[in-house]
Image (cartoon, rainbow, N blue to C red; front, side, top):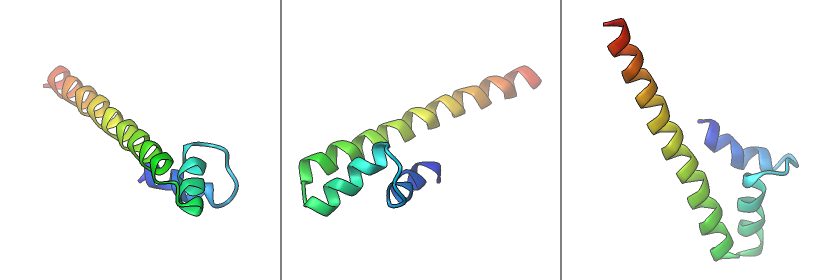
Length: 63
């Protein structure tokens, strides 16, 4: 959900990765949009893997 907010926040004037997606959509620049979208997806996958590893470690420690 937080990664989806990156794109929504770009509409209110923030300067982040979501702004790149917003610019790519407004200028119909597919290459820039794909790269920014893949970056957001990669961040999401990495965050998911880290949280899953952390929770598995905590569950093992707590029994």
